[in-house]
Amino acid sequence: MSVCPFFFSGNGRGNTDGQNQTSYGNLSAFNVPYIVVPDSYVTDHNIPGNAISVVVCAGQMYYAIMGDTNGNVPEVIGEASWLVGQACFPQDGLNGGIGHDSVDVLCILSPLRVTDNRHRLSDCICRCE
Image (cartoon, rainbow, N blue to C red; front, side, top):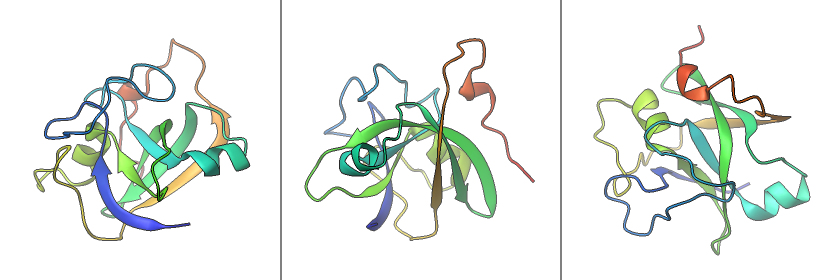
């Protein structure tokens, strides 16, 4: 798997190539903690949209969903919603145009997906200690 800087996607502030919706519909980069995974990886491993994921950064662990795919060439992992960026590195001034350049973020995908609208992941962007 390729590793690249941690950038922030969706219609995030400063993102000049952001799209108005993700591969799985409209997700607010400011309200939903999500990561972006290479399209070929999702296809090859049958990962469902909105799969539960874990992001480990800055010595903390956060929950998110796999909310978008990256079909660009080359396909790399390393994007996340603005909300994940703020949770991980709140003092770094990150936005859609300014990413986290260090290779020190771990994303773990689960085959489980979030399907129950009664539970909002934006309420669960909490530190797990």
